[in-house]
Amino acid sequence: MNEHRDVLFARLKQIRSQLKNMSINDLFTLNPKRFDEFSTSLDDMILDYSKVHVNSDVMTTLFKLAKVCDVEEKRDAMYRGDKINITENRAVLHIALRNKPNKPIYVDNRDIMQDVQEGLEKMQKFANGIRDGKIVSSSGEAFTDIVNIGIGGSHLGPAMVTQSLKPFHDGPNVHFVSNIDSSHITDTLSTLDASKTLVLIASKTFTTIETMTNAKTAMKWMSKKVGEQKAGKHFAAISTALEKTKDFGISEDRVFGYWDWVGGRYSIWSSIGLGVMIAIGTENFAEFLDGAYEMDQHFKNTPIEQNMPVILGLIGIWHRNICEYPTRAILPYDQRLSSFPSYIQQLDMESNGKSISSSGESLYEKTGAIVWGDAGTNSQHSFFQLLHQGSQIVPCEFMLGVNKSENDMKEHNDLLIANCLAQSQALMAGRRIDEVIRVLEKRGVSKEESIRLAPHRQFNGNRPSSTLLYKKLDPKTLGKIIALYEHRVFVEGIIWGVDSFDQWGVELGKELATEMLTHVQDTHKKKEYTNKDMDSSSAGLLNAISSWQE
Ligand code: F6P
Image (tube, rainbow, N blue to C red; front, side, top):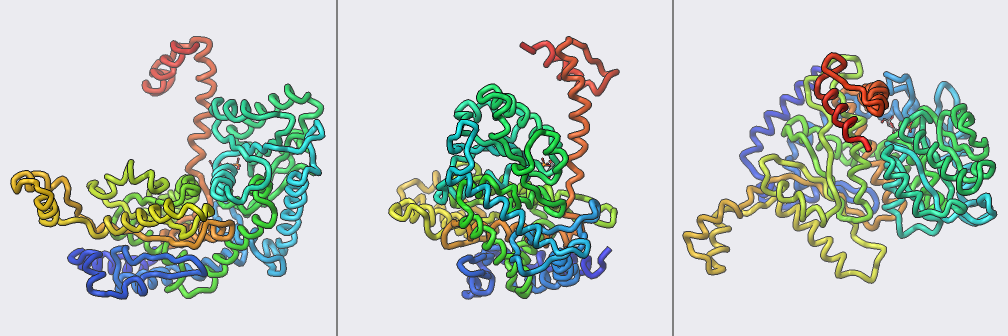
């Protein structure tokens, strides 16, 4: 137990109860320079947290909290290659994948930067070969379509980045299959010409049941279309399990390896990004890595008081542990980032959804918040009602680009920007009941009717939000944004004292699914289950499934 940490948590709770007497709006009135004081920047990116319900006392105490929890020392340990993933005894080095080749990083006394460079060059050679039509399909044609088969970190990253960087695509189309549901692979493959399609099987372990089942189905489809002997020319594998890729029958030159010190949800920078590289080209991919490198340098070298990931993480702690908000929303005002919230769900909730400390004790403080969200302005017309007037407060993280690739569509962009700024303002300012009555009466509504309607139309306000403002969504900016969120997760994990880099919580369900599969298969033989076989819910559902099977 970290006693200093507990003292600071108690102090923060005390400040919070005093601060409750003052709204965020009041804090702006008291301090006209609030934006300057509570925002930080890196190049063409600003994190504005002035609409979060904090004051300088809160921030100073949060910075002390980061110090007593050794955030800086632990960050340095990660960058050094120490084995900070203690349940798997692994280093955590996604930062190495965007590091410069001349800056050594050691794992087990060996500089890994040469491996990283070789891996990147192999990817580049292959991506260029596909893009310029030198690596061809079994029919001698250039590949027009790539299908990435993977799940979790082997899917969400490539899918989100591909979607986000659409204006930079000048290579083949990239499609994604993740779900074991037969609909996913059927709907994807049915649109494609197999003779010009390349399938990437992406799996760190090369054992994940969804991916391996989809991969076998894709292989069958391809063999049927182009012939068994030629199907191999349409496959490549991305994995750390090189023996298993060999057993699957993928030739060595088509296997893109990476390393156990890259976590699945941190792997978009590795060969897992191959589909992205094929779509946007090697130079744009290098920019993407560069953006992340810049954020890594910022995280490593900037004092915590101006350090963007540290501040974002500390605000996360403030909201989760001190204000006790159970969820938070990520709201990109950028349609191309509409899958960013799903990506962050894995990154954040798989990393910090833990209740045991690194040393194996039960944690009494709450950890990872439930992260959710969707693109603005669509979400304004769905769940924003709850954000504005619901009985729970949900801290919002707005994301906004100043410029769009569609430079000639300023009308759209001005409206998008105005909506984003207006939402954070409305959440904070709210609308008092007397103001509502005044507005209604001005519109000619009777006094009696105005008083009746007013409670429904008033907003309490005082709902916190932050805004991440960036110049334009390009590969470099996207690299920076993802790395920002990765390091934020790290900061929160250190303060909670969890191992953010394992994911044992997904294992039990996987094990039970294997057992359950036998029962599901038996439903085809019309086996009847009772509560002697298993709980009556599962038995009842299996029997209903059995009776409805076509
Ligand atoms: O579901 C857990 C998980 O292990 C994730 O952490 C990972 O990203 C995903 O499964 C896919 O794993 P793999 O890349 O080994 O197929």
